[in-house]
Amino acid sequence: EVIYMDNKERILEATMKVFNKKGLKFTMDDIAEELSMSKKTIYTVFDNKEAMFFCMVDYCFDKIKEQKNKVLSDDTLTTVEKLRGVLKVLPECYRDIDLSNLYQLKDKYPATYLKVEEQLESGWEGVIRLMEQGMRENVIRPINPHIVKTMMEATIEQFFQRDVLVINGISYNEALEEVVDILVDGILVND
Image 1 (cartoon, rainbow, N blue to C red):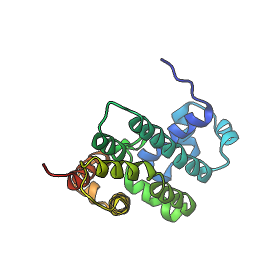
Image 2: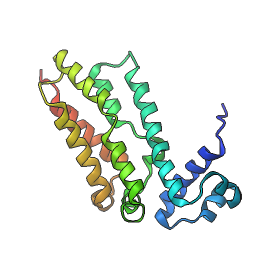
Image 3: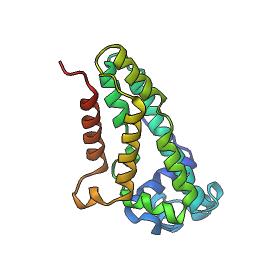
């Protein structure tokens, strides 16, 4: 099945690939080469690198939302399975991302980094509802969902800001899975 992507989407996908490889040092030439597309065509879609980054953040988080909604609407999953699934959602584009590259955005493109932070802090309503539902079902012990949310956000932010994962050879994906397991296992009702 061939999925048609418009130029904007193709450029954003290529931007993420090149960003993973080169960090902020990539050029519009790198993007053009990755796509076998002229720089002129790219400039008809994005005025500059910052506009491209800004859009890339929304694009990635839209993918996260799509995947979260898929998990939330899957009636074959229990409340706890949904909670694990929603917290572990990671768009394909972030699976191999070098987090230190993402943190570099903070100095060079503060507006874009702020957008990353805002996106990380939003969209928790479904997760909070799941935790509340789990408490009603008596599968999750009485906890304050906002504390769990804060712990999750703070951990992800630390992954961006420190090189703890890089130093220990842990991928973001592996780290996210482990954090979710630790958090979810910690709030389950023990039989």
